[in-house]
Amino acid sequence: MDDFALPTGRLILRAWRDEDHAPLLALCRDPHVMEHLGPPQSAEDIHAAIARQRSFQAEHGYCFWAIERRVDSAMLGFCGLKPGPLDTPIEGRIEIGWRLRADAWGQSYAREAAEACLAWGFANLPDDRIWAITVLANSRSWGLMKRLGMARHGDLDFDHPGLAADSPLLRHITYSIAR
Image (cartoon, rainbow, N blue to C red; front, side, top):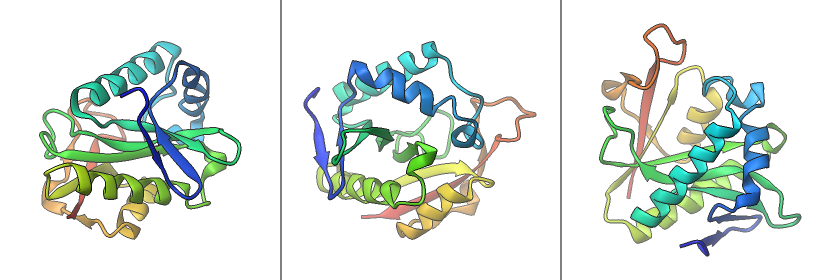
């Protein structure tokens, strides 16, 4: 599915391309972007991340897709769906997620992309709910979850198994939206 494309009014959510490595690396090295997501990522991390998303697309028909702005073809980040992480309350469920360049914040690009992903997911997947996770301090992320109509599940808050016990990002909160 290297030709996957989901257009919106201003964006195209699309399959990953080799030329996406450099802009994604810049995005994932930006301390503002990564404040609630972990340390800046290396070129090897980005290579592995894109390979992982391509694998999800090939296996499941969806992934965290690249976001391209239609007016200038700029790669703004990613948004999409993927299987929930292992050993979390959303394992085996569909997770929605997003990450955008800081200069794209505040322009409703994340909401536009997320709404398209939710619509695509409910139109193409059998799941009755789509889930999201973030850290409590990431008010931009959970604020968007609320604006999308997602509801918090406080009983499903958890310590992320992929993080060290002393990480300030350890505790995660869980949201979902029903079909």
